[in-house]
Image 1 (tube, one colour):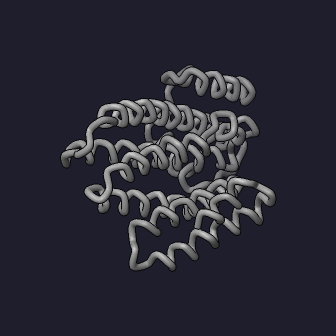
Image 2 (tube, rainbow, N blue to C red):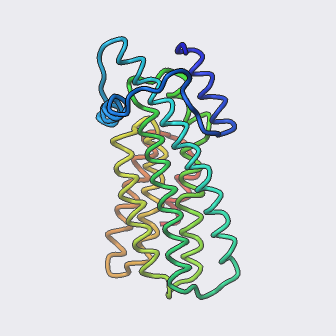
Length: 234
């Protein structure tokens, strides 16, 4: 299968995710495993090897996107299950948070793989085409935090751990996927502002941190009104 056709297959599969099986004879498991490790390491050399890496990369991205979409639906279902329940039991909290954290990990993996140097323009454009940054923020982070926030003070510990988990992921994404840095910076400002109400003893510290992230986001996207609004709310 040539590179162009594989790219078309990737695009069509992401629009309608389905299992992908490479045509022809299967490669030895040891070879595939070796090349998958090289993809994770982020390097390649040689034309034949690069063809194989592209094939494996395409297959991995399709697999990750399918898992992401499935988990995204599961999160919506979990959110709906507890929408009108004021007090959640331990199992309900576990299912809710585990689902959203799994979704975040799928988003991270997809973003990381689509930046791989073996990929082409179509693969590189996947996060934009599939609106991954906004989906990550709204369904992966904000939807969960609003649910947890509505159940304070009982949910204090769950919310604190969820905010810190998302905060760590955002700081990592700034390094791994800097092309969406303005999005990650704004989200970090939001997460720090959540911590202002969760940690009263460190309110002033978190306020300063939030302001710092918002100002960095403004440097990347000057004139964005919502950032000035957020700074005003601080």
